[in-house]
Length: 450
Length: 151
Image 1 (tube, one colour):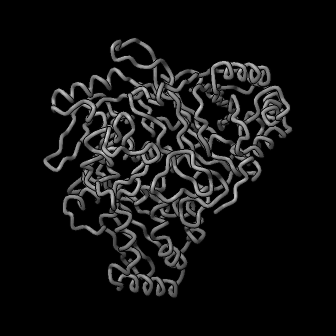
Image 2 (image 1 turned 90 degrees about the vertical axis):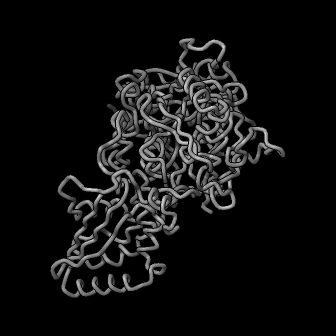
Image 3 (image 1 turned 180 degrees about the horizontal axis):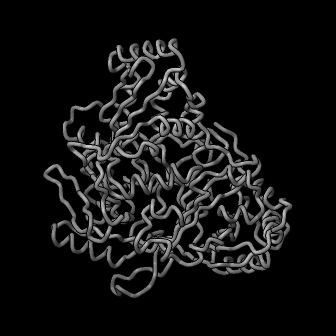
């Protein structure tokens, strides 16, 4: 087990805050010295602003947690020297806009149609707030605004708020599954998989690959204990999803609830299909702690996907022990920090014109081997697993409307749902470096001016 | 993605490596022949390919009197699965690369990007189009249908 100085790590990487409201603030550096002073203020526990939240245990849960992501242009704007900039991985250097097409952000999801602040090449800093209530969020924001100006200006913001019962807009219970990281208190429900090595999520430690640690950006004090995150604003077309499910229920004779469960891999209440394929209220019931304690193979015996379809959302995003191309089903895990935005969907009042979706941070030591791998290999292609062909994830995939199908294997014959549409549109994204506390201190101490 | 690509899911790899010297060539021959003489369940290459599940075909071929060819047909993107290949077959690469010109730094496990760059340099590619009799079927698809493939 590797020893980690939790006080040097941004808390968001290793723990979920389970706070009901959030705010993502996109800033641009206008004066590097002023921006660096803002970073220094984030490190100062005596400062009037809320200090950056670390992974160290809390004596008392704070009202508001603060995290900081920095884009590659942001590092340059802060004055990071060229040799150091060149040591960052290419996918981070190119950024979310340039790499958008490769992860399926095309058509309506292309950067040309993103929220302007997220497509802005001058997006430098992403300040992430999670808070216990709106008042705490607003107070923290006000203090931060006073601290970052005039060194930085705000380009845009997006607020999120947890839906009642911790459900997502499509109607499923969310935030049930997070990887367990070796030596770190778990931030999700237990699963039967081996813990992920720390180096899969923090730079500077052995990774999930043999004798390999991801290169630490230079200098060491900047890169070590850092991580990377893909921030995504994902708009969910709940009307289209509901209509698709209703149409398929009518044409197949399968109950709508079962179709929803087959698409996701869990019933709406979070009960995993592989543990309970016929009902969301099994008897005896599955305890809340056991809702993530499953695999698809071995003693769980669902290799053919008769209980949980191989192409379902959760099985694609986390194949667990299932056989997949490369045999890497457990080597592309990802930490997800997500919160809904927009008002709850009311099926009694559809097509209300309200934007709603998910604000997601997808965290790992390698954007290429984690977020981008999941999107390119498992979400937007099906050739990684037997029998899926060139299909996409039914919930988040980048399929053209009506273009692909979803198969529900059954012993008595497969049911195929045709005309699957794209239900999630990307409204923006950003690739961010999540530096350690030491890293932020290093950045704050840079001397050159722009 | 609005449309699926027209290319087969399989891709060719035609790597040609030149031995550093006649002695290295002899050592390469000995190493490869020793590997290939092993029973399949003891041959690290067979074991690795079975586990990875993306390689349709793979063979060694000695070319001229100083080159070793490694020729495979595999599913998906080689770059994407480079880590899995190295984890499962890295030691074989280390043994062979010790005898070839312009080899990447070794071991490959700790020099992954350099190894990937090397493979791209020595891959002869193919004159398009790459023909496949079953362009939409992966190794996993075929094993699933036949149910007699190695696990």
